[in-house]
Length: 451
Image (tube, rainbow, N blue to C red):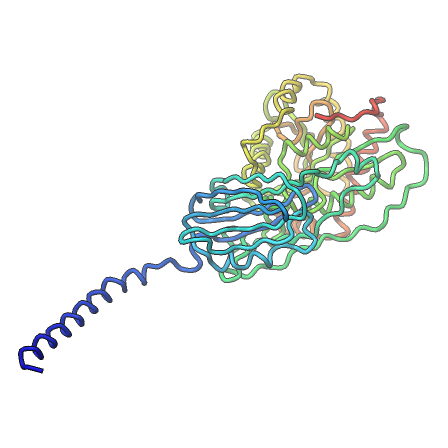
């Protein structure tokens, strides 16, 4: 090779080295800016129930998404744009309970650059609702997948069969005081164990003469549930767990009484919209509606039990107004699809001008409050009134019971005690019996409402 040829080859080699170095400088910053595996989706929570199964996907910013159904076998497919597959999404398959009534399997995978595809294998035909929720309370943005069975369980038929759909076993996922939002990312934090609800003994009918001559149906409404934990005690107790435990005990006591039966608006850990609680009570022609809660306040020394009924003309106190606003916010926290309209709601609100139901509610509330005073201090000595959405059945006497303050350490401890829960249920039941003895329900049609 000539000297000039060697110089040209050496020059090319130097050019290649310089070009390679510039390419490395160009690529390196991009590789450092790549998104981490924990960005985007923060948590996925699944709440199975016979009524429907909810999948809540919590994320840092609004998502662009599309969804469609596939048959043979039945599947719901959701494409999430602008996110990357991370450890939360990769662990989806482990979150579906084997006894989930509606979902067989849920998995996620990278469909194409910038798009993650979720595939939900279903146990039957469903009517899905997919919608977004803005940040509220401890939650960030949420994409909600509600899977309703095409043929949902009929509460009226279940009642006629003298049984309710079996509850799905659900992890309660309590929040510790140090947590800023309820979620299940094991790499972010460790979850404390859930609080078990005590098992109920078999119902044994009480001997003696019935309090009423005809069959009386009472709807029991354990407050909150699912995505909505309700108030959280200083010891980490969830209001939704306490209310369900007390409601189950109360149900057993009611059904041990001749000519009485009880129905729960929820019998496991899932969210029920406020209007749906009222709608279920009306569908089965309930004679009474009892909503069970556990109060909370910013000061830990607040204590005592309270009973509330609906008001047509404003709250009876500023505290009652504040509480009604807080309880009515359950739909925002639990998550309601605002595109789904309730055909009964407008008619129900118009019917609220009828004061007879509110007067009966006041009598029921007074009877129950008197019994509660025998086991706990009363926060207010009289029944209070406010605009609680869950009490707006125009034809069913309805009360809301704040059993105690879960924000009070001493009362929180009692609310988690089996014996005290039983005393609370017995007191409520005694108040119901006293009300019915003085105000026997009128005869009603054998046909249930279909609205």
